[in-house]
Amino acid sequence: MMSQLYIYNTLSRKKEAFKPLVEGHVGLYVCGPTVYSNSHLGHARPFITFDLLYRYLTFLGNKVRYVRNITDVGHLEDEEAERGEDKISKKARLEQLEPMEVVQKYMNTFHRNMDDLNVTPPSIEPRASGHIIEQIQVIEGILKNGYAYEANGSVYFDVDKYNNDYNYGKLSGRNLDDIKTNTRKLDGQDEKKNSFDFALWKKASPEHIMRWPSRWSEGFPGWHLECSAMSTKYLGEQFDIHGGGMDLTFPHHECEIAQNTACRGQESVRYWMHNNMITINGQKMARSLGNFITLDELFTGTHEILEQAYSPMTIRFFILQAHYRSTIDFSNEALQASEKGLERLMTATKTLGELTPSDASTVDVASLKEKCFAALSDDLNSPIAIAHLFDGVKMINSIKAGSEKISAADLEDLKVFYNAVVFDILGLKEEGDAGSGSNEVLGGAVELLINLRKDAKANKDWGTADKIRDELSAIGIELKDTKDGVEWSLK
Image 1 (cartoon, helix red, strand yellow):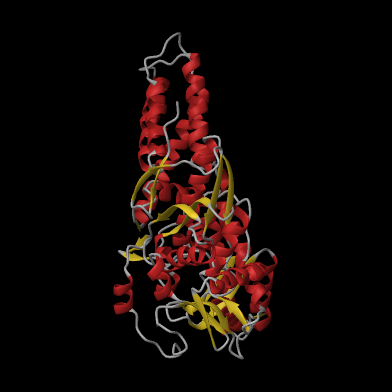
Image 2 (cartoon, rainbow, N blue to C red; image 1 turned 90 degrees about the horizontal axis):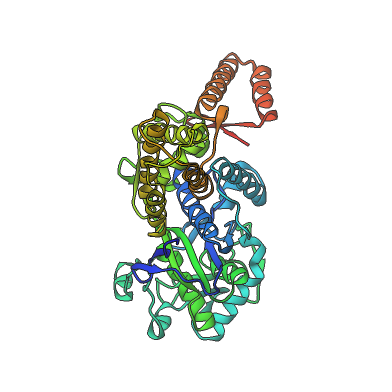
């Protein structure tokens, strides 16, 4: 008998028994990437976390509709102040590309990185720019119910009025008085009733590239709106689970709750789940802080603080070795320990196929299985589940050494169990020659060619310099000249 699955609901601040709206069917929505740059280690965590959830829900016999969006419009540089350039438009201007070229380029890289990490593709992957009509319809509903107002071609959510009828801040634990106290009045916000009101639709300035027609103005939707529109379009007005990083709890997910309730008179999400962050030297890893390591850099070992390359499965195992609600601090030592642990686990899994059964067992396979599944059912406690797998590794090695025995039935049961947990649920896989060793060789070879190109440019040998760049591009390696040197990435 499998244990009842309990998950921590950020909304109630406690673990709750998970019961889907429709038995055997689960609706899962996870906030996806804003595709204007290469994905880094911090981005890998939510997608591995919710891949684990998806895999375990499926293993428990559920049919899961997994929706993960792509943000390709509306995410501004200064989201708090709702000003600055759209992040994708800015990248398009800097790289002299069309905005949708930027989107496609980094979406392709994101998908490749997710494939490397063995993250299951979602059932549906909607893009914000493809759902402008649905977002306008949500705005119309909020306006009709009196929780938004138009100002100079933009539409803003009336937080004060909403809070009089509902509770703005229930997810994050903030109250409106504190929000009022801590929200600065910023330039360009005079058209708002209150500085803490947030945009549902922004009138585009003349230089703003990405814009769509509406009855209010030529403009674009606010960032928070896309998830309200797309989650309910594909999962229904009420659905089971909404996931994302804890940094999205406020304001993004708080605003989602407000938008859905203001439009439909009820909340849409029953269970809110949030993963914690990855830190580096105790500070959150983030693009905005400039302290990130891209996944391609990890896989090839080319970032300056890396002592070696780390394979995708080492990265996945590193993330799964911590509970999703705890922080993980990056270090070479921690990754190297994960690499060794993963190798030990995979070796033991192979050893299962080499064991010879006996007439009776001296090991307790049923207890091992029960403890491992109990851990997974306790809010996806992957580190405890992995610890039990390593207890099993000792068991396997003892059987091989002859100090313990296992019956044919128990051996078959143990094989099925390890295959299910290691490969199907945790999502690990054999990497063979595609691991860190070959990645390290690739990284070294590219760096050598970059240095040869640098020498050619210093000698004004532009033909050779261009040839190196073009030949690398032809085999899928892109060079980018920056003020800090040359960066490279896999296309």
